[in-house]
Amino acid sequence: MIPVDKVQDIVNKHDALEKELSSGNIDPKLYAKKSKEYSSLGGIIKIARQYLNFESEKKDLVNMVQDKSNDKDIIELAQTDLNELIAKKEKYENDLKVFLLPKDEDDNKNAIVEIRAGTGGLEASLFCADLFKMYEKVCSKKNWKLEIINISKSEAGGFKEVIFLVNGDDIYSYLKYESGVHRVQRIPETETQGRVHTSAATVAVLPEAEDVDIQIKESDLRIDVFRAGGPGGQSVNTTDSAVRITHIPSGVVVSQQDEKSQHKNKAKALKILRSRVYEAEKRKKDQERSSNRRSQIGSGDRSERIRTYNFPQGRVTDHRINLTLHKLDEFLSGEIHEEMNQELRLKEQSLKLENLNS
Image 1: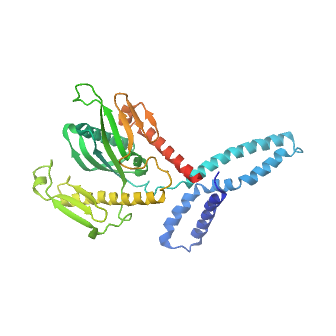
Image 2: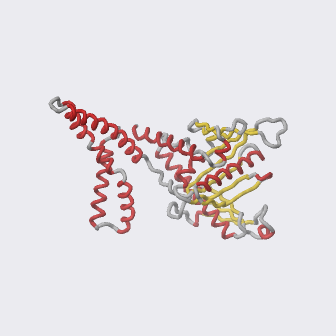
Image 3: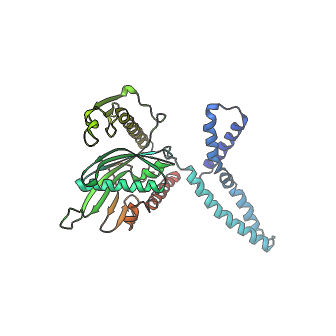
């Protein structure tokens, strides 16, 4: 049961904002923020008021049911209304609980995704490429824009590392559940004995940080330029176009050499660095704020094994929620990725509701 004072706070806040916004005596700089806050309360205020009125309405209906002087039809009608009221209260309570859940301020941001081959050599790099193709298909189905920032290829079409930006609506709220170690079990094409090999790749999902999200001083950066190596043509290898940026306070280092232009490489490197520093500070604050509460699916730690893709058995298992889907091909093609994501969202919502009630 939700404490009445928490629901009353919603009503009081709504009424106070309504009075303030209609008065005309409000700082123009705060108007947009307060209007947005008022709008967010608009969807729940009716339910909040009905929830607060529940006890008095229930008392009136119970009195009608228990009053033997009333006609039989009136008593039956009152009993029906009472049953409906009790059922509505359960729905009101659930809606209010969801509304009161802690919000992730980064959910509406774009996301930077980093996939790196882990243990398993060549097979791990091939799996890294498979994961990238899976996310490409998910983005395509959702009409999200995917932009490759950096890519490091290996033999046979694999990737040692790939970093990309995803633009769209509420990207981070969806992709954040992909952070962690993804493990694959399959028979490599080069395996002559038919043995199943286990390899892994690490996925890190960062909210794209803007200048307003985090202030990075120019004096805190060390920028080195050097001659790019690897594929890219003669001009790439003969000019100092590659850039390495070090954020001295945090020790975060980002190198970028995909572009022939030093300016473009620097811009891409700064985008990644800003998001990495922002995510590190956010993680630190989250740990301090919820050190005694478990409100996330897994730890969000990149070293945590979150999912196994078993090719011989045609299944994918998410270890955070113990969910197995025996549709590996459909999952990798992005067809049923939403199904797994929805279960992860529901589980996290459930954990947050437990914390709300504790």
